[in-house]
Length: 293
Ligand SMILES: NC(=O)c1ccc[n+]([C@@H]2O[C@H](COP(=O)([O-])OP(=O)(O)OC[C@H]3O[C@@H](n4cnc5c(N)ncnc54)[C@H](O)[C@@H]3O)[C@@H](O)[C@H]2O)c1
Image (cartoon, rainbow, N blue to C red):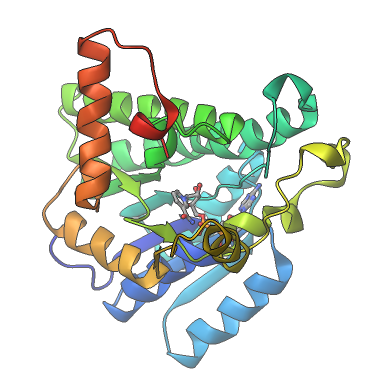
């Protein structure tokens, strides 16, 4: 997709972090932006910030765990702006797990899978039939994670499992629209190359009451990128980070080239991906720090 001017872009989880940066990047290129989110304070902030830049926007409450909520978002987007050309299934959370997975609460698994996995499935179900029926140039982008799709980090099994499933779904979606001869393109967005400075590590702010953490002992104690930096500094490591605006820029450039992989890596991560492939081919037993984080 070369020209974003006048296009309608729907972004789930669009009021913070990567989604927020996507909203501004696309809005500044002339797109009409529809943000769906559950965080009322962040929604109010982005609503007034987009208005201050005269970006045509609609900010709506939308819970991606609910198919009805996503269908309502799609209806409202079409009523406000007409046909939709860009969908970002972006909403995601970190369950903030730590320790042994056999000690986790079912509620940690349920919340993370509800948002990260079912959220993507529900977004596909609500929007893909409309994009395919329109039979026009359109793009469906799923925000995944290298943690799960490409590597297996050893300390966040729920998140990693959700993102492994999300990647399998995204790749299949690409195969299916291609086989159907549809002009709709599918892309897998990997925020990075470093940890992206967003609200992901404070996801508890939008955790539903009925799925509140029951076992405090399995909380990681990390609630921001600053916390991660401090912890890394204690180990003598300087943690590098990526601003979400850089991720949005990388995504826009990739979409211009109709790229499937919206993936920025470092030589170190490329080496880990290669080492992981080699480990599998040579049937080596996995070693966490070689092929994971
Ligand atoms: N930050 C990173 O380093 C990183 C790395 C890889 C992948 N990601 C992925 O990027 C995506 C965006 O996350 P982010 O890092 O910008 O974090 P973020 O917390 O800043 O943004 C996530 C947004 O999703 C929203 N959200 C949460 N639950 C929701 C629900 N049920 N319905 C609708 N919206 C909901 C939140 O309110 C928030 O606005 C996620 O899918 C995340 O897994 C992030």
